[in-house]
Length: 119
Image 1 (cartoon, rainbow, N blue to C red):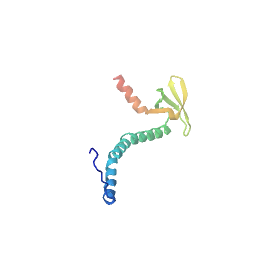
Image 2: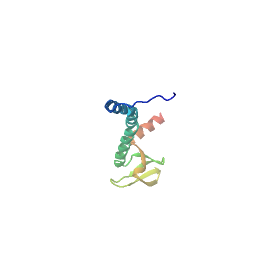
Image 3: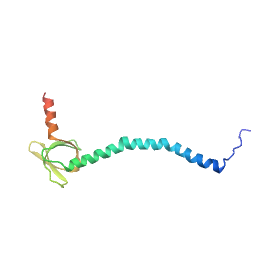
Image 4: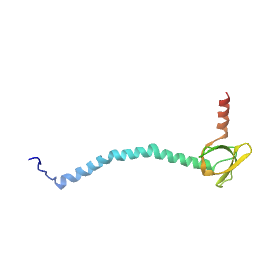
């Protein structure tokens, strides 16, 4: 015959082996999730937290880049206010929402970059 007989295991032998086999079967999936968390999600969360802190500490003269790609210099930033005034061109000051700032370049770094470009 083509179908062989199947025999069921006893309950005592299968209980210990099945729980260990189930754990071993899901171990690679758990490992992938952990690696994904520590390699991608956690650094992104830390970077977002750091950007939020830097947005709250903006001062006059800081060079900023908005999410839309507009580069400007902070002219007025009051603590706790949602909007700040940014000069994007000579005598052109716009009011932007603080949370739209995607990158903050400190004046010292901007001066070093300008000197390096001129050399």
